[in-house]
Length: 121
Image 1 (cartoon, one colour):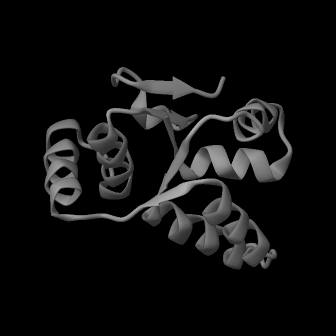
Image 2 (cartoon, helix red, strand yellow; image 1 turned 90 degrees about the horizontal axis):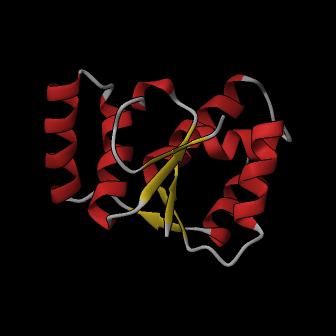
């Protein structure tokens, strides 16, 4: 079980070297989860860049299970954000992984030093 951050999906769709690592996970039988807030981040990025996003969002929804924020995740995220000076969105993503007791796949340097992080390097 692994939770994908927006970073992981964006690397995958870009076809980068890091994206090839993500591709291996996607093509495996690994159970993948994606916080719903990541869908907003990804769509916003592609809108800003005037790139097609619908098929990519559809793929994410089909290949991973979407984690909707609930009160538990929200409250964990608030504490994480406050205590670690993380952006709230990053805290929501990390709280989602913690709630599932899963690793978070990311390359975002804000998560350096945190437990249960699988870095794309």
